[in-house]
Length: 193
Image (cartoon, rainbow, N blue to C red):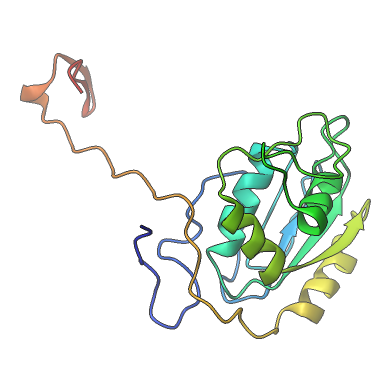
């Protein structure tokens, strides 16, 4: 059973985004997320933007973070593809075709196109919630930001945020007197933890 930790009326889980990755958070109320593939681009105005160079774990993080924010209705895929992995091609295939019973992304040309850490319901939700804008190869930030501005005001997806992964509880602090080894400046090691 998923824990409902969404902000009342915000459209996204708190804290958002729930999954760590190579991205920057912009305005969580924006309707647009931007995947810059292998290109390190700074995109203003989106809910979240960042690179994705793998066609498996990278895509899982994108899906998990997008479906945990109902405000996101568009994903712009831009930048240059990561050779061999082809995450852009694979993200398009995932959205269009889904996965088979073994988690293989149908129609992907990537080297290892498997979803292993997401339930099929998460993939279905991603397919329903967002529209993908295929701009693979586009690296002009002004053109990308113009697309972000054009699509930023769509109505939120009419459902609760879908939380796939729960954040692990922060480790409890260890007092210096409870530690096996003190490394100074408040850094200690407790071998039993």
